[in-house]
Image 1 (tube, rainbow, N blue to C red):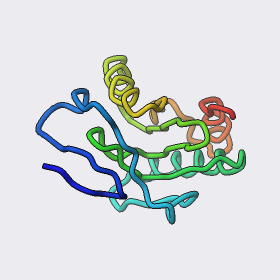
Image 2 (image 1 turned 45 degrees about the horizontal axis):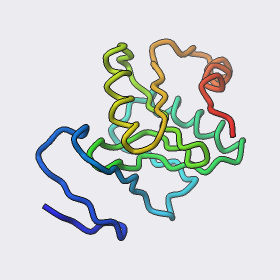
Image 3 (image 1 turned 135 degrees about the horizontal axis):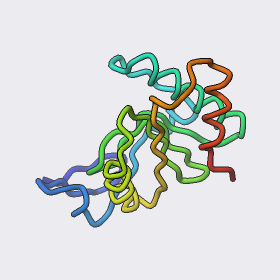
Length: 137
């Protein structure tokens, strides 16, 4: 099936995301530097994403939240300035990281998977821990 979306032609088929030749990161320009709040996120996930969004905003990075990579899926935060995807997960196994890296490399982005289970409960400490993951300009 072929579709036109955001003026990009792409082909969707019933194969693994790793089989796609080209990946497109789709977002509305009106969503640039806006934190999108999906209704299904757990509070811990949303707070961590909001803190990282704030950190990247302080660095004057251009950010999109909850955008889509064709053939890969929806991503938490995409830092356009550094072409870095930040994913917040409860499962942080080496197998998951390896599979995520294989998928995201086709989109030409780096992925950083952050394990929510290791982040401190204190908001300021969580802010400081998340700063360690940030890719600078």
